[in-house]
Length: 214
Image 1 (tube, rainbow, N blue to C red):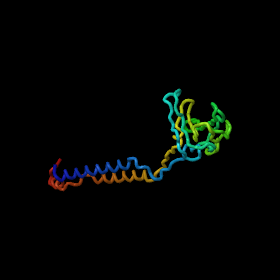
Image 2 (cartoon, rainbow, N blue to C red):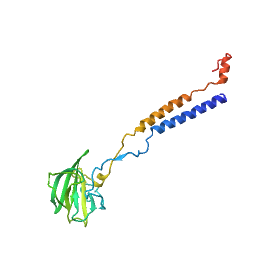
Image 3 (cartoon, helix red, strand yellow):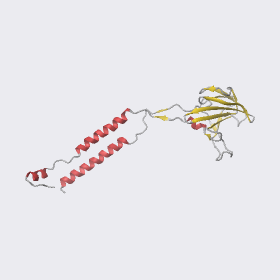
């Protein structure tokens, strides 16, 4: 193999590697665009604004064991409780000597029931409530200065209500994404064309003399 042929093949190989790297970079996931927007939170705080959590969610390993099936929020007695989302009141009254309010919220994955205690309900069973609407007032009876807030999807399956506050990210179409990939492939085709073997002047001179070189 002649030196010029070897050099030409090395150059073509390097160009193909550069081509491959460029196409892979165009197709690889890009960092989150700045125009990504956070969708509206699923639920809002039942206090109307964020407050300290004095006791976190700590469910038991088994439904019949003791645990903390909700969170305790640091709010004083007499504070207003609002609905975290649209729903229907399914319980409003005393339960085991304590005022309890429960609201059923319908979501994409089914119903979730939120519960608040100790409270004095300002709504009645069967009433539809909207997000942010006053539904109760905090009473005495729980740990000092705390509102217990629970959430469950079934009789025994409890979930952390704070997780319902987490927003979800919705990505809007990025006009430059497809254009960037298209440009990459256009450049790839051009580069591929440029990697075709260049004429070998020595080979051409030999062939012109009637020698079929292979």
